[in-house]
Image (cartoon, helix red, strand yellow):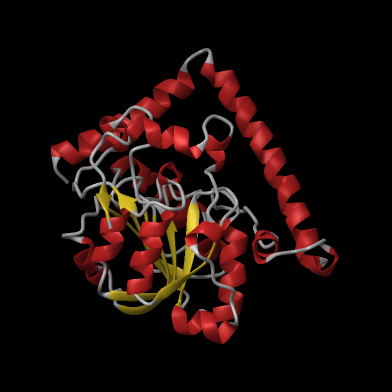
Length: 311
């Protein structure tokens, strides 16, 4: 990894660490964490009841019914439950995954599948220290063999992404691909050709709203906070990612209510399973973290002068 790329990754981590470690923010962070844990526990229970008694929900639509499947175990929001729901419908013959942008691996989309359902695959992380912590978590604390859940340190670009998969023995059909790098996600997903996932999770940027088909330009060493201190200038819109996924033969089967991740299933599998599909406008949610601070148009106004590509 080049010094430029390493330094960009370190700047983002240091900025977050400085915020959390100040005397003013540390109690606030602990309070937020405690509130979030209570909220997650309550929401998991509510979702379980809604799923069990879906017939009692007044005027239930497909978004309400999908949201009832959300559960947080190791995912950031409710992705764990949604993944189990979708794979229960479309099957997972190989039980294989690829996920990149995992940080220390304790809170990511494939963690629950790897830890509790025996799935194997590949985690990729650009930070040496975070990848080392992920190896401790999976290989030492949970005794998962290193050749079953591979954890590699790599800064992923569209030039190297296919080679990284091939070097780790992954090609052809896999069950699950998750892309979350807070930057050039669109370009990385577009470049992937050596694997054909049954289900893909892509993080979308709520900055651009449901109707714009936009992404940031491609830069191998893109770092969102170096580009703009708000962090709003990153990633791609839900519409842009949906159009790209459709070109690859997948359809949008929903978004999490946290407004972070979109779920795409191979078109033939979604049809066979009878999964409802969505337009980006139907599925779009404003990001939960920003919901209390900004409306989506406000966020776009902050960064609209920066380079964006319509796709």
